[in-house]
Image (tube, rainbow, N blue to C red; front, top):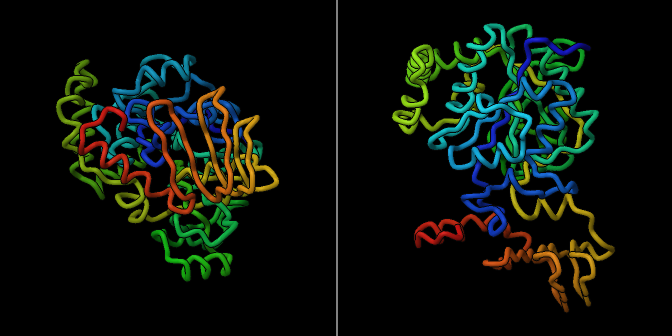
Length: 358
């Protein structure tokens, strides 16, 4: 299987990662952290996986203006025009549409692989082969997504129902399903006909812009204005002036759930969207008592804990179970592991206080 010569990667790196506070902050969100087994940041790991089939010169990153310099530091291989900085986040449909206008100006036949920067992916060879298959499927004009074969009845992910096989390893996507309750998730997994929605997409830049014109006409009209301004060398100023007015809508709700000809490529590699500190605990190397602890820690009658502290600090636990303890130096988080999703409530409180530690 060969990769299309007009393929480009678009890495979405604009998220805030509030559920990984206190390490993740407004000024240094989740994609710049090392949260999996690797010491690399999630963004760097994403780019290096992509570069196994697409060169750095065909990789673009969409981030926020606030984080442009961090992207440049993490990915010095990129040139300035390959980093698209949003003045404000407006969800994934505007992000992807804006990137599509840039790629179409470079190459009218451009095919996009749209990839989140803040996911964990293991088994790189299997992932790369899935990327190749997705790019190949997109050459036929379909809207393509990757679905992950579920390993459990997960209620935190959306699902894709799989239909008939179109080509080897490529299937018709019957429908997208929102995050289910426990009973429905168990039914989905038992049926064998559902995959987790990974949030990774492939399509021709021209095709996604056509779909935006049809289903999100207000966004499509503004993107055409950006195109026209780019021809006059005035795009940056117009984006800064008007980007906040774009509709805040996801590519799933705005486009993928509405278009026909959606295909799905099943992926069997290890994957996590790293939705909370619980995800980090699940991916880390745990000791015989299911603890994730800094080297040299002392744990007495303690199990199921995730502890992360500044280097050199001694950790001692006695009779502690199933906690997340994260010390960032200026803030300390202590929370039950099964309530780790509620960390975002802390960030909301800090935002209301206008506390710079948010």
